[in-house]
Image (cartoon, rainbow, N blue to C red; front, side, top):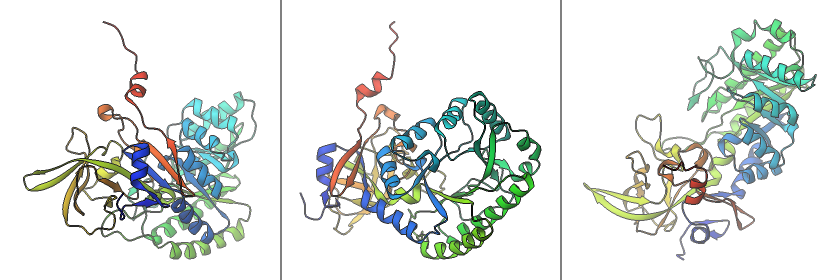
Length: 423
């Protein structure tokens, strides 16, 4: 073991790699705790924090955030089951998504969630019919609105323009008759999510202010109580050179004033901020082992045993020019960089590039490299079955001890899902 290698709560990364193999994702509960508590201690007490499982649906990560006080925002039957298994109270859980099946809606009804977020009037009517069939009479529903105002500063806009998410605000304003005809579903509020990866606190504040005002006006027009408003979140994490960290302190000071004013006139309204990336990204490291180091036309390549099959976000999809996630040598963590190295994975595609011309210390076969800030949108948001490599292991380090929280796929695991037809 070298003296300058990367450690997680004092556990050397070489020990993790030896025990669990590579590639693997390592999550640090100290980073999870510090990030959550920094937010929670400054956030207005009227605002509840819900963890968006889509960012990292590992049941142990969810359970740890639940132990800190987070609820859950889920978008599939499996995520709903994960939140329940992680111990999240159904009353602190909401279910959203533009394409819910009847099976998923029925599961929501039986779970007794705080609310189902309906994203179309057809879905609202289906949920109402399913609730009647289940013998229910008071099923809380939130309407996801697609506002008529635009947002800026988002890495991925999800509202304010034509979208599959939610119902256009103009349509909702004309839907009072639909709401009145509901037999079991009861509209209790509004949900809006404008986008992700906001790094300017002024944009988050602007979105929140407009969403609260629109929710208040809409519920008054529809004649329904304003018991809950989910104003989204989308707080950003800086990944790339030139990006600045979100000024959380300035955001929360300004947000406190907006929320304070709103709660004076709506003291019984539950306010929700849903966060995924912001809660988990900084806590994760994707660890790969270098298999080969080679030169090609003057460029140095480090070919590793894991790549974009586990970390599709590192491809930089949607970017005209590829930008690198922060990548470090974990074996020589404190050594200075000596030159550029392009880090690739094992896939048979030129897109399998974790980092292009990354400044690294000397790299040798057997070294461990880490893609940092990788606790969100990792393996479950990646083409893990390409070349049939399967899912990597996931390890959670808590109180200085490592715990396997997801085992890696074996070839037998992948083949057991298939059915051989004899010829």
